[in-house]
Amino acid sequence: MGDVEVKKEKAIIALGNAVTDIIVDIKEEDLVKLGLKKGQANYPEKISLESFLKTKRTIPGGSPSNVVVNSAWLGLKDRNGLIGTVGNDEIGKLYRKDLVVNRVLDYLTEIKGKSGVCYMLVTPDGERTSIIDLGVCGDYRIPFNNIDDFSIFHTTAYELATNEKKTMEALMHAYKNGLKVSFDLSDSGIVSRRRSLLSDIAKHTTILFANEHESKSLTGLEPEDSIGELSKMSEIAVVKLGKKGSLVKRVNGHLYKIPCYPANVLDVTGAGDAYAAAFLYGYFQGFDLEKCGNLASSFAAKICERYGARMRCFA
Image 1 (cartoon, helix red, strand yellow):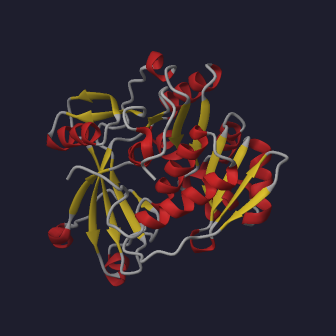
Image 2 (cartoon, helix red, strand yellow):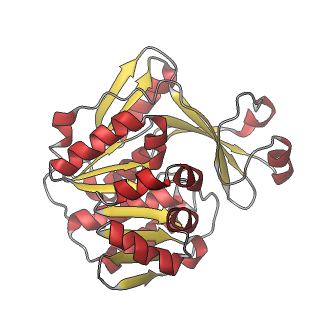
């Protein structure tokens, strides 16, 4: 995958919460005892995880960061960039070093405070449940001039929920300056709370990613019906269906049913990000939508066979 000749111009710039994943194995019953919603982002005011941290693995993450790192691995080394904010702590230093190792251009801002962390609690079935402490990572400082150097701007509903004002400024800047805008709905809870705003954002996107829960939350429809509605909003709509594969459709175009590729599942953390990374890589290369979808599905399967959300990382 990483040997295909790529274009020379800069490819994808992402705005993301610069969050470091702390991955922890946990039993189903312990998840219930902690009062956490499985498979979702949780924001409890107080919770103790000390007894579970003996098996932790620390990996720099965040959804948009995973996208630009993985597409760099696929062949866009030194052509992708990341906008975000880290604290002046060891986790922040690790995060920036990780971008260098993965050959992603660093547009991060460092400010005084604690860097963001996300505890990813992985149950035996490979499903992940998250607890998020954002720290300073939502204090975005947008380098607008740098955005204009890229072909694709990518962000997600997580960033919208973290800092709506700055995320909207970056999105609209990219749209008005002719970049292809990629947006991932990311979380059905956020979608249900901000349905009107997200519907409006979708109308300014080139590629809209959603899973079946997010697409239903936005449209009220089941996947094969919802993708028709999503493709009326965005130029290209993608609905990820997990083990059932995915659906890809261009506005007024053919509906592609992409199969799920086989995998020896170890951890599904970041599978959706891996799908988006490979899809955007293919799109940037000029692949047709069916080829983009198959590359994305295949790459997502590979991510599920390892711990964490990336093919390469510094840790």
